Length: 300
Image 1: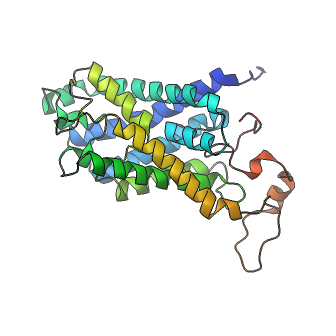
Image 2: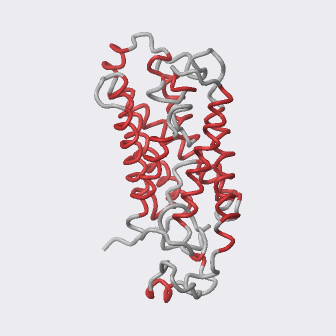
Image 3: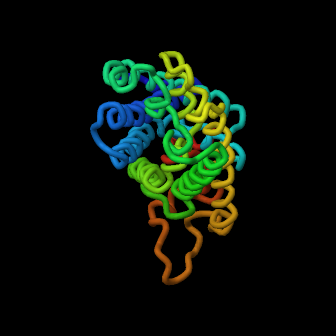
């Protein structure tokens, strides 16, 4: 039987790369299929992005915590749930995974995209990266910025709730499914103003890939204004706001451990087995990463 190698930073970065690559493979491919191929609709896009998140989390969660998003890494570090020294390497791995995924989609859909938009213009730029108003609606930079702050705040608020073992989180093997559904819901409700990037790596990696493969205006929006920085900065701000809201409104009122007494008439949030496993001071009594519990809780 092969011995399991210690994970270390290399393993964590490889997991973030792989998980984000899976996420973006499904996400950008479905947009190419809908926009350039004419197969599917907005619901197809939201579900495929959600499935991409779910599958990416399943790939990476055990090793890295499956952040798959610099906004998640920054928010966790801001509230002491993740080491700051790991934020930049994680973000680089996430962006690289998104970049490679977008290159594969660009290659695979070369003929279809070429027929749909021979000039590789803003008409098909949305396959790879986001635009205000999805490239066609009367939304400008400020509206897109506002939208990305709000959308990412919602994402991180819910991730904080789902990963807080003091609350009522899903079991570890179901957590990726629930997080995927969160992304589906955000896409269905918050997808108009800016295409719900809610993830700097998901937007910048594919944007860079498209620029390198013929989209000369990839850094600008349909109005000709430089736009690429908005889906980077706004989600980082929104993520911190969202996790801060959870901590301020819910997290600070949670019992110190899942075993603390609960009021009569409340829905139980733990089972006896969980109470036995989580002793006072156990790092799993707080948010230790994103979606799934891992074996090495002291790493962060």
